[in-house]
Length: 89
Image 1 (cartoon, rainbow, N blue to C red):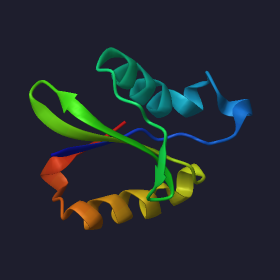
Image 2: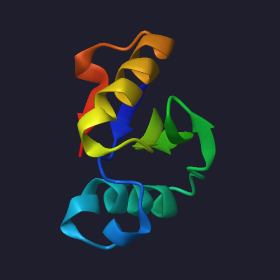
Image 3: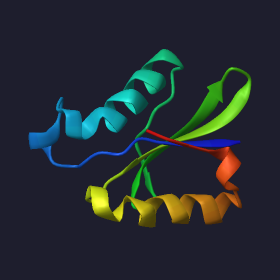
């Protein structure tokens, strides 16, 4: 399993700005691969699915950018993932 985390800020004012490119990338991946990123978990919004025959967890932290690590660590610990299973955008 891969954890793909898109960094951004949760406020609407950052929508469609360079500050939310990570969120935009997750939204594009989710749409392309029919993955709903709506479940509230790990201090963020998550969705699971398959991309290129690999199970993935898409994560958009709902914390401020400087606290994104909290969400990331919770997800990595929960699934017992290593850094080679992580993609950060």
